[in-house]
Length: 293
Image 1 (cartoon, rainbow, N blue to C red):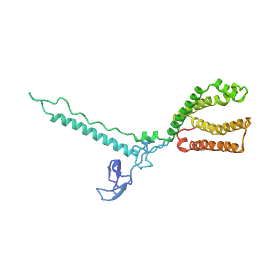
Image 2 (image 1 turned 45 degrees about the vertical axis):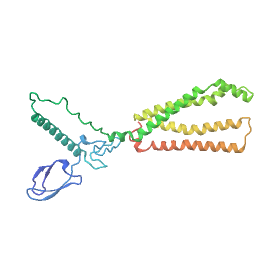
Image 3 (image 1 turned 180 degrees about the horizontal axis):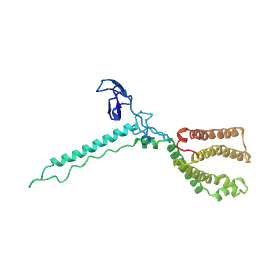
């Protein structure tokens, strides 16, 4: 960085990284006048980044910055300091190798040379903090969570398909009711739910994969699927309640109350978390990464 005295106009150069974030007070060597020098700000796109190399702060979006809003480090000065340190380390390594070559002992007749050099020390593993933070981003957490839930739903649906024996269920119901029960009745009451689970799990799995890839409409597809569950649970339970009500068996007011409370409780237990997740999908941390087109 080039500086000049505001009084006598004497000029000189000083490295950017030697100037603190809050600035530095200098005295002119010619006229002894004191003045403040401020740290330069990055102005070129070369030093506009979205992840701070010092503290690993990330915007998780299209926003880029030349000065980290978290730790206040100037990206240009930080990168220049890293380059200077790497250059010094490289020069020191070259000097060390040259010095080792110059003082290496000359082998004499009868002298025993070591058969092997000491094993180099194992390199320490470097943990990439920015990569860890990126993996813990809400988009990744929601995407992988929906993927796991979709796999469980598909597995339950496939197990229900394998356990479904329509003829056995039809014969058992016909014997209990002293009347012939149709195969369609058995399928709608016992065999249709596993098919719904497999189809829904497949749609959820596909939406979660596209959501992880930040593709358009993935967030909206997840929202639709969650609203579908919120609506399906009370409707399916209400249909079962009506079917139980019209069956020719004795009913009591206590049984009606228990069934209605069960519908309300299960609907709230499943619908409340899904509604919260739907609202969270509209958060800026999600919309800034997964944008609808």
